[in-house]
Length: 494
Ligand code: NAD
Image 1 (cartoon, protein in one colour):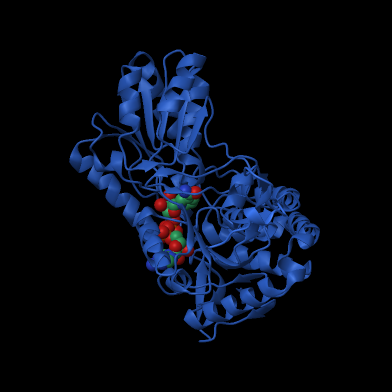
Image 2 (tube, rainbow, N blue to C red; image 1 turned 30 degrees about the horizontal axis):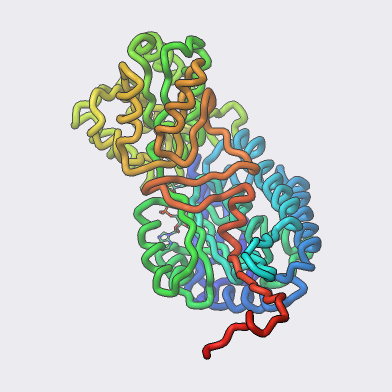
């Protein structure tokens, strides 16, 4: 069993209180590590270190951009060099499948550091054509000490998504991983330390969100909080951040529609896409396509193919390469999902398959829920409105384009969406009408380092990834240079 430490000011340290928390594998309940249970005192130390690191011009000034790019590249390479080890730690810590973690999460994290290394030397403002004999420059500057608080569903990826753009722009970072999944961020700290990240540039504080998260959001010397998590905690984060007018980015929950028109006749591909959208990462994905709308002409065939294939999804231990769907992160989350399933049944949604905990054989040691499909004839079922964050798909029939757009938009969320049709005009019409930060056409779940990710409505605001992420880690300073030497143009009060 590994004893992890936090990473503050370039050193690995225990919590000031000396307290620790055990990390258990959701697949089998085995204790795999302990890590520090940090508190307010640890946040204060991390912020002081980040502040001092930012004050060092060899880190934060524009001429250091090539050094920052080189550091980000070294971190990317460090992740690749340690990919097998990190993948195993991440899988065991989270219950995610080793296949998904190694092929998607860890590679992506490395690619993300490389992507922002490319951008680090291209962060600049612009000259504004102000009338007169004037040079006006909108200068893009780093914010200072930034923070990030993230969810447990893609731990190493979220660490990369937050830390890489923050550093590329010349800021420093206090990072809080989710309490359930703190280990991969501490593995990342190990890499950062080995490749020579300057002390204090990145600080990783582990422990409970209610204590550390709140200390971060209220801290007067933190300029920004980038939050990925639930809409309910996101609202609190925004409130707390307002006390010191911190810049805020919120990546929150979703209830995303996945819409299949009847001209998309490749049933096998359509059903496969609906399953990928819902059951990837056991449904614990913010952009999960949890409401699947299917046109009435193809509905019956779609439904029977979906139920047949969902019943065959291999559910199992995170380290088994044959597992396609892993465990739920915790007992509490598993029970929350089971409660939603009960509510779905009570309110009258038609359970087609699944709907129970899986306890056969070794599965009894972990938190597994059978992939579930409800047929929903109403949009006001709780399971159609609230984010379940588990493998529960709501299947709905629709008749017209206008109807499905209205129903698809009928939630408080606006994170992701998809439309499947071969009619390009309809595809664009629907894409423009959907109120979501992401629309896929004939695709699902594809996110790229090169393209912005973020929600509309109560799914949040601000963007992760792409050049748009840099907007969230920089501020614009306007510099107005008077070039006219005629005194008549000089500002005066008289
Ligand atoms: P959560 O909101 O419970 O926790 C998120 C983070 O906030 C954790 O690190 C937690 O420790 C911390 N936290 C908890 N209470 C806090 C408080 N009072 N103050 C400050 N921080 C606090 O979310 P979760 O259960 O970890 O993750 C699931 C949620 O995250 C889902 O709603 C999902 O949709 C959302 N999510 C969104 C995106 C996106 O990009 N939009 C991505 C992944 C997950």
